[in-house]
Length: 509
Image (cartoon, rainbow, N blue to C red):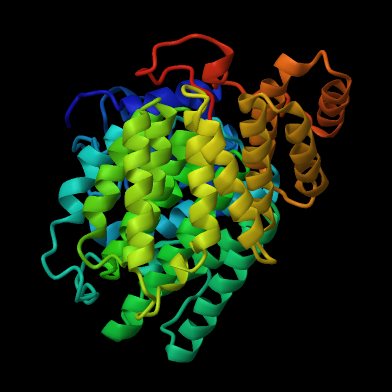
């Protein structure tokens, strides 16, 4: 026995308000409900788990994860509690903050995490009350692992080893090996979910995506022929990215981050390094939105490294636009323009001779211009002259947008209106803002309301004009409860003076 306290368990236990005796009784009751009536836990045993680092044997860690998940209203996994599901009693808990250093556990953790997420959805307990890991945590814990397999780009992993999760160990439906036709249907379902997300936002279909991912995780516990297994890992990676993006879209930030990590792991398991890099780039976009651009740049370095040499030119262009946005959020004009220029060159050099993977097909010329508009509009908080470029690219993006991309169109109008406010053209800003307001209610995206609030802040300098006063009243009338203020985010740089190199207190865009 290590006699070292399990600090993770202790911290979470402190949040519950339970006594040790109460937790012991809850464990016994929950275990009986899960089919283990013989389990008998007492107060002294709970004390040893917390104070001396003793690790209980199965099924207790799973029972505890379910109890803490329900009590805290967010997903709590076995590793979150400080228990390594494969270690023996008395060994020290793992210190890996992302819990996925052993790739053979990916399917197991994926299934557990999605199962807990679904439980919270069913009971209406989903909350954002969890810690968000920093970008540096990703880079330090995932770099070596993502590069550890020299055959990564060509070979799927072998699944007949004793570390593969045994489906009998988990509470899930009876999955079974599947064939090519079933996997093709799963791949089609990803396309359907992706189209819905692009059109209406993540709020309405998130649970369906998480449920599908949970089933795929169970399927991955069975060995399949190598080609099919690789495709199934690809489905898991695509669904995990979608689950993460939808979670981010509705403000479940720590949950989103975990899904992005799961997606990178799944892509790596399937031998798809470009997909792993793109998944990490989503986490970088999340960090910029949350006002942490320096950490986003850490993530982008990891994303590019993880993606490897097999990334299509258009994919590299997409990564450059995200890096440009992070640089813009730091007020680095030269770096922003350089990254955007490289993105344009890479996009133009991609002649479309090779079919792009499905996850990249949404990054077209409209999206390139939309990201350029967003980066320049962000840079305009530091350098108002960038607002002109933001307007040009936003108008081009709007012209190129096709049906089915309503959320992105709302973002384009908000970027355009914000750039007009910064450029001193409130009349045009009002016109574009009205276009955004006409469309924003059709989506279930919290991020659109975040951007609307930022535009509302920029309009404040023109609040003396009657048309802008009316616009501000319209925004106040439609803003959902709880979205009028966005805790943890600062004001635009043109609204207050700060040092251009810092990242603290910056408003997202």
